[in-house]
Image (cartoon, rainbow over all chains, first blue to last red; front, top):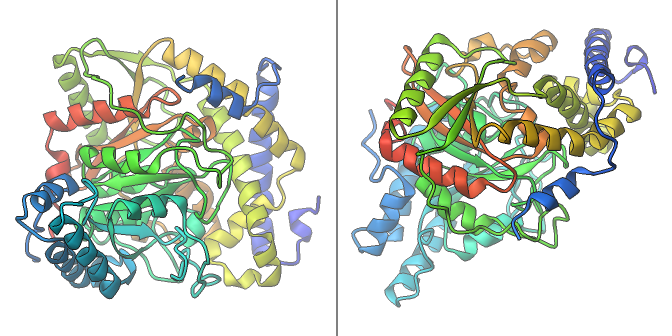
Length: 55
Length: 467
């Protein structure tokens, strides 16, 4: 992964803002991933929808 | 001050067409004239198509004359958010990159609606590539709220909400990746259905974040949404996410008696404002009087759904735009450039984890919520539409003010449950207020039935902006 601060497609100000946003987003995502224990039942989202569908 | 619209909603117009009190051509001409008169102030239409509209209206009149009318949608003035493909028509996606792009395919939902006789008047405004909740757009100009043109109309289906509020059209298509049919509905005082994932095809709809995108009907009233949803829903071999069981079913005989309505005790987004709190309290009183049981509930898993959903949306939108972005990163507006930059740096492991958790999180949400209540009634956003002047597009606002606009709606894109957005009152500034009713997966029809009951008790949806 390239660090946002090294991404030449963005201006220095954009790079700083992107880096801050990525840090915030990945921290939140990581916290949600690790803060709870979800059953590891290998069910995917589509399977859930299929199960909920009327027959 | 413009002349009043001839009909308040599609159903009224359909009755008039069926009774031959108006022809489809007259109706199209009235709405084209109304749109032409109001659009300079609202900017809801990107482009109107008067010749094609009148030709479609004439075809509708011809069908009706020979006793072959196609149903309640036949002859109805309609609008498409400018990301639904129609072969041979420009589809600009609110962007500079696709401003003149002409697809060679047609979206499945467009095909289905036109097979039932809708009369498209043109292409409707949207946020650039549907990435944003405001209706602000630095390429094609801002769309403005018909209730107060200093306010945003909500987005990203900004033109759909504004054109309906101004009765430029009587039905519209929108898409929703984080609230994009529900937010303009709430801010512009109209109605929208965000369907269960898999019930409406997205084939031929420009993608933003494919696993979060939905297409949805928008209209002035819930009774108008019913035939639109029936026309649009159902499996489509061109969209592998559509469910074989997705076709519309008859509405259940659902009323509020005995219904358990959940009200959130744990707001996870700004608001509700005092005016919206009062409107929701009054709605609760009205529902209690109809026999509903109002149950305060701590809605689980909202921070999780927000964080995991944002991870997916950012990564998928950056993937979808990678090729164009590499070719010319300056072709994007400031806000979308920033958002794409964030998505390009989301770790793949986070994205995969967010997807793998989607089933378990959604199941747990459904079990915990719908074990206690039948539906949730939540704010559509924290209050009335924000001021355009308060939403200066910059990297600071995008992570605070802009992001929070959709915090009441975004979790449900991750979870895939349906939501119906309906007006519930007005604030002290005269701006519409809206709530969303959240139901179980595949409970779209019950939400529509409850919406019908709600609008039989209220007249918020019949009020018109002071244009």
